[in-house]
Length: 463
Image 1 (cartoon, rainbow, N blue to C red):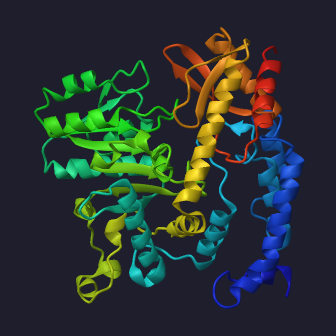
Image 2 (image 1 turned 90 degrees about the vertical axis):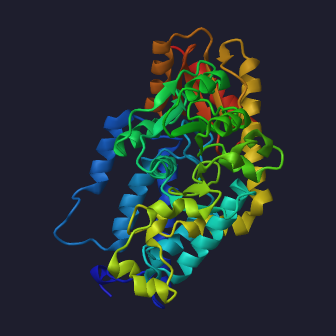
Image 3 (image 1 turned 180 degrees about the vertical axis):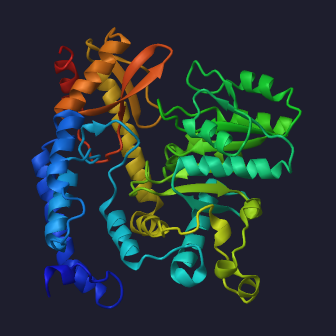
């Protein structure tokens, strides 16, 4: 078959696997060659050099005549891999950007081939049932004492936080909703309030990195309107966890709704040793959870958990071609109220496969490992007089910097490491200044990797 013809083969059906198999070999070879050509966690040379190399490989973007699937895959997958920030590299530790498990990536391929859409049962019969089953199981982990725990699959913490604010707004039945959060809250909280037409959240200072219950009490006490308090279990900057039991008590005392953004810290629930850090999580009315952070899933793999599925009723929506009343009455499941999106990918498969493959203890072991790695990195920093540590890590995030370095020097150091492609570190600002941020999400990192990371920082402290 001509190259142009093989490019037109379909991924699904009985012949789909046969069409995919040789293309997968091409993709895997390209991934290997691209990583070898990159030779590090990030391509060297900065944005200009990356753009030049990518344009050379990717042009013309729309040729008059196709070049066939293998050439296109080999060229572009190699270029993308060579120009990638590879979270599997032990020195790529800037963000909550995890290296996905191979088993999860393999499951994701199946979803791409089958292409179910979870907006109506007739487009995704098995996927719809798998999502319902897996979401209930995860929600029971978050809300073990809830009357009917349930969870929605989202694209991540941003969508989950928006849904939480939406549900709280609708539960207020038209009364103005007063939103309170800390300065440590994720930026998506403010954006969600804006999108939903709410007043800007009352933002409490968090000089210690977490909400102060006394400040929260003072903010809740005069509230005359329905109030939503947003707490965080794993802040983006430091991984800190707000005092959840105290905040839950305050919400009970003042009749406020509690949402906990546990997008980062939520998977501590898988760990037998670390789960106590989330005491109070189960008392929240809504909880955001991301498994594309401490769950090692390809993005996107977010969830919003509630203790009672009836809380999701405000999302109910009708479109006759998707969930007509007579179809629903006849027993066809209604999926449209499971999301604000219509066409929706079956992201639940990779999650379900991972849970079955590793089990709770297997995932918990990975969580324990990365948190232990963070503690080990903190120990190494404290042992080096040329470096200073911000604080002992709560999760897998460690803030540090050259001793006494001013903000401009810290920022410049980070950019030099990025430009040279030797290390990918984030940045975080606290009242004490600017810090380098290492977020350790690779469970297979070795002590030598951590020492070499610090050697790179120490060796690059001068231009």
